[in-house]
Image (cartoon, rainbow, N blue to C red):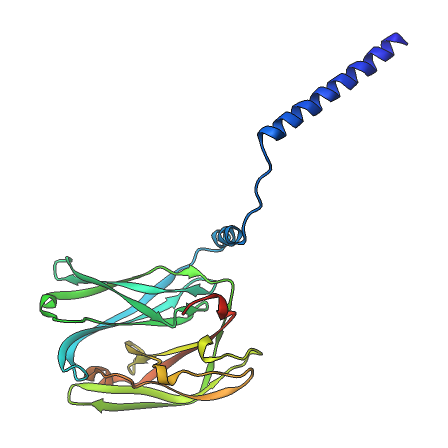
Amino acid sequence: MKKLFFILLLTTLLAACGDDAATEENSNNPPEEEKSSGEIQSENLEELEEVNAEVTSIEYYQWLDPAIDTETITVYAEIRNTSDVPIDVVGANLTYLDTDGGVIAVNESQVRPRFLNPDGTGYVIAEIEGSIDEYDSLNEVDIEVSPTAFPDAEIVDFSTRDENLKVDSWGQSGSDVAVTGYLENESSVTFTEDDTAAAIGIYDENGDFLAAEPMYSDQNFSLDANGETSFEIGGGSPLPSEVGENVDSVKVQAIGIEGMDNYWW
């Protein structure tokens, strides 16, 4: 009986020691602080599949811009979302290289539209400001983009119908390219002018990229749920005459962003 009492007493003492050790360990290691929503969102973004955007085509022209009556260099590029998730391509870095591969200059430009669904297309439009004398040896333009995942808002691609390509001359050294038609919203979301963006890519008869035109401020549009609206995109500034001479078709990229209140265009 005494032996049984001793075993029970020893078991009780060991359990008490274990509780004291656990209490001391917990006091030395306070509980982790609750993570903020921003930290959680950041971790979730890191867990998303790697995002990529490919610069699929770059074209540049040295020409006399009739809008400013000055020799200039204009660069156009086509950007495609090669990821399986929507992305935000805030901008593009352009590097101008000479015949020896040396850097002549560097500048930045926007991508329009900047929010792209998988396989979606955006465009870069950049122009050299000021004298172009230092670009006499220009041989290549390199463009880099750094997309980020865009998981918190839905990108809705609008379809088009009854497109009409409009091509005119702009003075003696420029061309005017625009497209009109109807945009159709097949979603159940209504979009205001603050929620939409658009641009057009311009292509030759072989489907090769030539240039791009943005949507200008007086071309902003809203679009009701399951509705349609007429549109005109482009035609707001002159393009190189070579573009007007070779244009055969355009690709309209028009989008709406659901949940755009959390983002800046």
